Amino acid sequence: MAGSSVQKKKMAVTMAMYFAENGYLPTPKEFSNDPIRPPEIKISTIRKIFGSWSIMEKYTRSFCPDIMRGLTNVKPKIIDPLKELNKAQTAEAEKEGANGKSI
Image: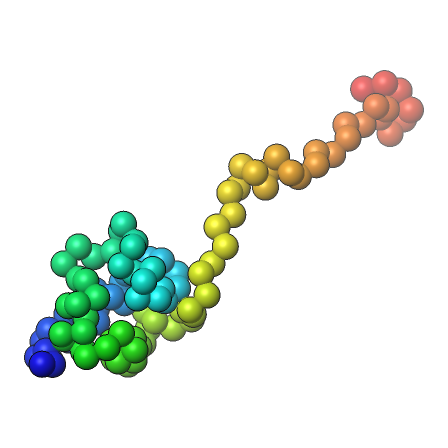
């Protein structure tokens, strides 16, 4: 049985915020295993309200286009800034000044 329009709108907004927080659209399996997913929403709830995961995605994209713009199904790479900083080489300090004397 499909959910009411109020239920669909509320769930679409919640899911759009979740997708924006993650930065991508996860698969249903990734969503189920995600510890930060909205606690009141499960795959079974999505199937009861929308009928399927793909219909929920399409409805959410059409109902919240500003939030969903630019999101893809590809998980973004997480870069550790400290590791990147350690990889970067530091510049050599000048041993002599412009006039040839030691600094």
